[in-house]
Image 1: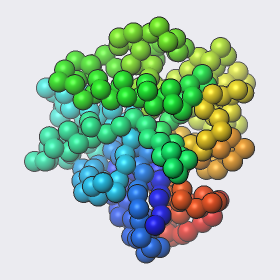
Image 2: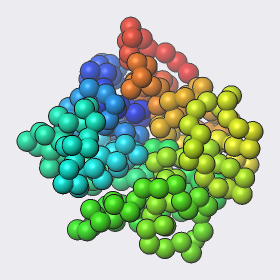
Image 3: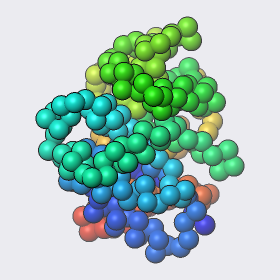
Image 4: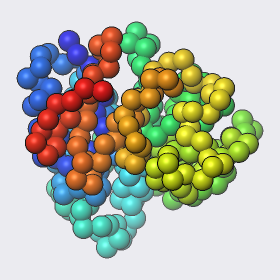
Length: 279
């Protein structure tokens, strides 16, 4: 039985179906991990959410920044007017309330202690251990699932605070947690999150460091699979024990799955030509 992590789908329902068919042909599947950003940009976000939801307990999905943005948008009375064209069919669907409620119940982070892998959409601040990050993720999940989640979502977005302090409270604390888990790419000096630069490592300002390469990172030592960063130059960073599997399905690239249950992680991709590659 295999466990696979699947990268950012962004509404690319055709690629998701092709990838699931490819994985099923390889043998029995124990679990499918989805790194988040099921929705937006692509042509059929509603079909993607329905497909993943229908997988039931076999699927473990963490929320990405685009998923959170959709949940926030959906609480507004003018959601249909504000939504991009690619999200209109989902918001107009008869089963939209059910799909959105299911999405809102998803976790922000997942760890399988027996397998020894952790999944998050974007990254972890250098000062957080995996166990600490899981605790903070549960705080955010509780707020998302609360009866007053609409008021909470209205305060969630913004680029501050940029540095973690355990004494943070209220909306500022939860905003930092959300930014770390769903938007993080680079860390600036003094462990401040950089929310501005979003492109390649080669073009990054010299003062910025990828979150996973910060010296002394507290979460080092355990494999982490993440998405969010389609401009990252490669998938496998074994020297840091991280694998970034957003391979640009939303931009004409491929949709990737990483076999986690193998001794050596194996990359399976579908897209143009539906080819299978190794790392």
